[in-house]
Length: 473
Image (tube, rainbow, N blue to C red; front, side, top):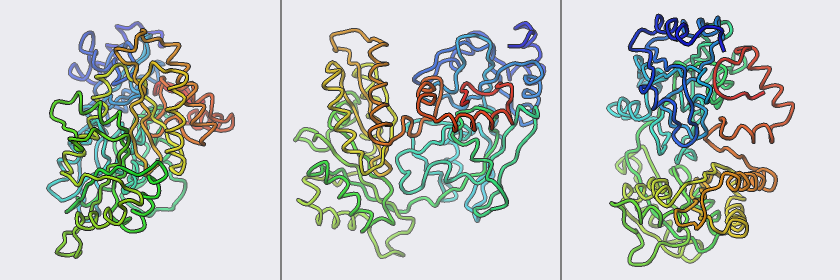
């Protein structure tokens, strides 16, 4: 922390961003509390409205040793965008960095400031028949999505943010305030190391991300959706492989929903209904979506008809029941699971991934572990089967019969992550990144060589470790 007093820090930063760009007291509350984890206390909150202001803030903070925590929409789930409890960190919100959104329709790209949200970006792209198809349950900023390398439900078709990032602009702490431009609006550029990827998935460490150029995609002209019940766990991957063989060019989502997950949503979200009624929700179902940019007029293909024929062929082999329904309604069920889970009690969330060939086996083993060792907890799991990701949420129910206990939760985390990493060759953070909430596991599982390299990279651009809340060294 700087030797300056709090008042001197506030005065110095206010001179840069102006009265509207600096928050104190109760006005900081929304910036100090994370979406799920992370409750801290900021020295102040800065809201610069230009690249020039960000540069000046970086220079001033580097000169005086004041630590910055970059923050987008604060929707992250690992505490990486919230300050610690010291009261010595300055939150730098990108919420006012939103002046640039330049769409190049012919190049199918957009240059956009880091503070523009995903929803706003897609609203601006829609009149041009384009979209940025990272489908999430939150509304993050562009900068936040890059910092976390978000994926979402349609990763199998469109990839994660990294796959759609053409160029990136960042402000460094060393040299203080220097702007680093990485890449151009090009899909092919092999003129040296692709430096922008050093900052993708960095959880806000080392630099302030200020602008990006993204590849965008043609909006689908038609889609088809079904919710199917597989005949067995083994049939899940058989069905996925068959879909990829027959309709792989159109497959955009293959989402797994456990019976507990569906029931939690149906019971607690008022406008939801059980799509299998009058039968109860099955133990497991798969939400399948196909998309095509062309209409039947040009492709000769009606996706819903194609999906229906495929499902007919798969009946009894891999499918025992199916709901061919309104896509909006079925996706509403999928996106309501988190709300339903929260209504049951306090979620203990695991965002993990394993090779997709082992995903169903992992889920079986993890459920068995919870039932045997933590029988008072309730599993509500769902996720992205096609890319090997699963949100293995465990709920400490309101009616668990015993109070929430942090030591028990820590023991559960250690057991689940050990299973993911050691037994299944997976990842303890599939798409939420690394933050104070899970940094322990980074230090446990990253090799000494990887950590040494990460520290070396950070020392080049932020040797005083002034930017971000995560130390990857």
